[in-house]
Image 1 (cartoon, one colour):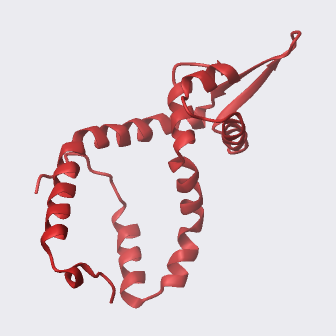
Image 2 (image 1 turned 90 degrees about the horizontal axis):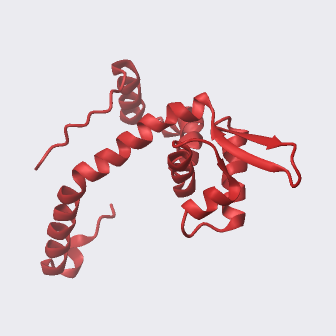
Length: 155
């Protein structure tokens, strides 16, 4: 199996605590401790969040510029996304006193700090795409040749 050269550092103490919770079966306590991180990760993992951060990496954009850059996003979804990102402090919204008013969105310092992990994840995906596609093909071939009951994962 080909290994990735990308390693995500995890503090040893935190990893040991997670393993201990799993070993003891403290799943409710573990879930409770993971809620804040899981909530933020779900925001960051949203398709449009990642793409808005990438587009704004080039500098401030008006709403229509964002919309043109993001093929397939509805006006409503983009509105919800930028509002959520503004609420979380990842982007700023600046209204210029012109007629009609001009509004620009830009990454905040916090939003800028998100660029590095997003681009690292994208690089990991590019680096490992062929390996993942090969694994899928192996899995699919073995699933096709296995008897119907052999692929049951319950239990």
